[in-house]
Structures are given as C-alpha cells and as structure tokens.
Length: 202
Image 1 (spheres, rainbow, N blue to C red):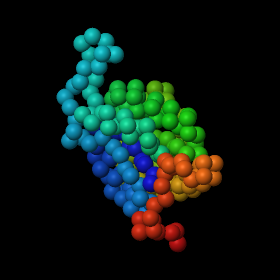
Image 2 (cartoon, rainbow, N blue to C red):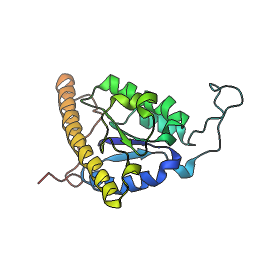
Image 3 (cartoon, rainbow, N blue to C red):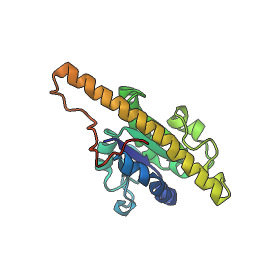
C-alpha cells in the first residue's frame, strides 16, 4: 500500500479539500493511504526552544504522529504558496525530512512533488525547487476561470497517477529482490494490495 503525505499551510485548507476530492478515485483504485494534518487537531502556539526568545512556532497537535508518517511516506505532495513559505514547520521540518527520505531511498522508491497554489518566492526560498512540479508552472490561484483550475487539478492527478504506477512497480520489484535475498524472511515496506482493492488497468 503506497502512502501519500500531503503538506499544506492551514490557510490553504480550501485547496486541500478540493485536492482530496480529486484524489479519491486514485485513493480507491490503488489503495493509497493519504496522510495530512488534521486542522481540527491544531494546538495554540507551542513554544519552540530553537527559536529566538519571545518567538512562537505553531505545530499541529498530532505533530509526533506527523513525524512518524513523514518517515514512512512513499509520495510527498507539498502545496506551495506564500502561506506555506511562512509556516516554519513546513520548511524547517517537513521539507528536510522528506528530502532526507528521498535521498536514502532514491527516486525509484520515493517521490516529492510541489503543487503550486499561489505565486511566491518558492524557487529562491525552498529546497523544493529541485523537484518536478505537478500541474504545470502556473499556480492554481492564477487560473482565473473555473475551467482552468479544474484542468490544472486534472493535470495534477494525471501526472500523479503515472508516478503511483511507477512506484508500485518499483516497490514490488524491491520486495521481490528482498525476498530472494532473504528467503522471504524480510517484511517489505509495501505489501501488494488485494484484488478487491486494486482493479487492473483497462
């Protein structure tokens, strides 16, 4: 089962809600497990001792769970905007941890994708600038017509589907190699989905 981690700033939740609707067919077809912070479980401002005196840094209340999921995801979607760039835990925690997992596992087993929500200085200010953008270089907020925005979401899920299929094949090959090298005693990170959860492509 592939695990997809979605990072977003709380102010961008309307985009997340719409994206989740677009992702539903992929979630069901490929038995994807979607992970994202629950905005109903957000704490007030939590003190971070690494910040200068008097400064506050907001983390989701379920931050420890989020860190655990960051370490286990196969696909990372970062919803990029001026809001996300000004959300410290995204750039200071989520992006570096995702990049570290990508570095450890390689592009064959882990993917990172920015999805541009609004114009921002993300190429200058974020480590995400080296990763391919889903949905094209024009941000969603710049798609003035509803049809243009829907076309962008369609492009995002279409490109994501290709990545899901590639990663699924790669992880199954990895599982086969691990099993062959350990006489099947190694527990793989990705288990094949059941026929009921996965329908073959037409």
